[in-house]
Each structure stands twice: as C-alpha cells, then as structure tokens.
Length: 285
Ligand SMILES: [Zn+2]
Ligand SMILES: [Zn+2]
Image 1 (cartoon, rainbow, N blue to C red):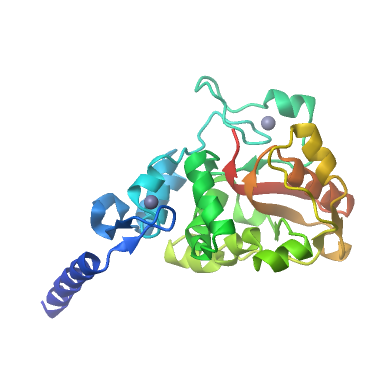
Image 2 (cartoon, helix red, strand yellow; image 1 turned 135 degrees about the vertical axis):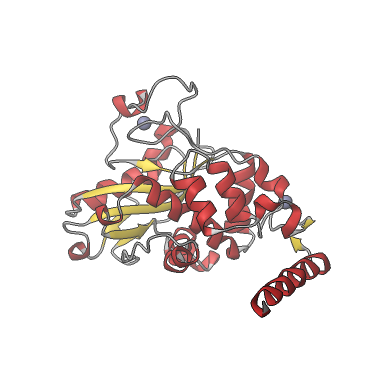
C-alpha cells in the first residue's frame, strides 16, 4: 500500500515538474512538455517492440528523441524501410518488390559489404545533424547513438562485428570542432544498451589505427566523381596489426554518395581487414 502511494506521489511530482519546467527543443528552441502525448514517453520494451520487430522506425525516433526535440521537429523524419539495396542500403522509391542490388551498386560495386541507416537524410534530419555537429549540441549524441544501436541490432548479429571504427577527422578539423561526431555516436552504446534493455554489444572502439592523412574540401556540392577524387588517398592505416583479420563496422553520421566510407573500406581491406560494413544515422536518397 505504501509502495502504491509512493508511486502515485512520484507520478504527481513528475507532472508538476514538467508543467513548471518545460523542455526546450534543441533544434527549433520551442518549449514543449514531455507529457505532450503519451507516445512520447520512452520505455525500453516499447522501443524493442516498435523497432526491432516491425518496420516502424518513425515511432522509435519519437520515443528516443522525446526529451530532446519537440514533436514538430521529429514529425518529418523518414524511416528507411524495405525494399532497400542489399549492398548500399538505399531505399527504392517504389514499394514494390523485395530487397535487391541497386543499379549504382551493379555498375560500381562497393568495397564494403553492406551499408545501413535508420533514417533518410531529408531537411528535418539535416537540421538535427547540423545542430549536433556545428552548434555544439553534443547532448544529441545520446539519442542519435541510441538510434544507431537499435539499427545495429536490427541488421547485425552482435558477434558478426569485432571492431568499431568511427570515420576519422583530419587533426586540424578535430581540434577546431573539439570532438569527432562519429566517435561520440558509439561512445554511449554500453550505457544506452543498459537503459533500453538491449544486448550490450561489448565491441571495442578503435580510434587510432585509421587516420585521415590530409584535409579534404567539404564534399557538399560536389558530384559523385569529384567526391571520389576529393577523398582518394585521404585515409591511411597507422597500425595494421589492429586491423588484420577484423570484422569491422565503420560508423559515420551521414552516407551521401558513399565515397568516404568506400575509400576507408578500401584502405582497411588492403591492410588485412576480413570485411567492412557501414552504419550511419542518415542516408541520402
Ligand atoms: Zn523543435
Ligand atoms: Zn546500392
């Protein structure tokens, strides 16, 4: 009885606190209430059911981002659903048919095995990733990392990967930004896995073996060929022993043409990696 009363009091307290101190959306700055809708309250079992067993990524993002973004800023996220390209993971426009290899991967096979992402890189997600990367809202690493973790469990068996490598930044860029956005996305995995009641992947993160040799012009605005030239030989491996025989998952924030992750994969495979897979938050369509 005392336990029930305490629970009730706790719930009342939560409602009062929420009413007094609304949250501020990290993207648009609008104030909002956590209790805006019952569906916005995250629970680990909900996330498991929604995401791992159904193609309902939209509701999962709502659950994960509920205490960071207002419902307006999460409303337009586009989850990537089948049919997708078996190799690069691009979502086919037509919902007809099953997963298959896309025309681009037939003409230009990729060095990595598979690339997967939970969301399409549209305006809503671009706003969010810009906030994370360029406006110092690094607390977004946690929900974005959570999204990557559920996506990892959706497409991979935990034991099929034994090394995580975030795509490295050039030293000068790293110093200027102060953090590697790809690294932060996997840094919280263990903590998030416990919170969401997911399997803790327990895969080591390697941040020194792969390095960016030189600064590259921003890939934005470049066509496919220019991107490939721009990124060619931009990466190197400094400690091949750490790469040899490894089943690697490369992690980055956005997959645009795939030129960057493909070039990283080439270098890693040349240095003895068994295979390389790719996981990003966003996938350009
Ligand atoms: Zn907002
Ligand atoms: Zn493809």
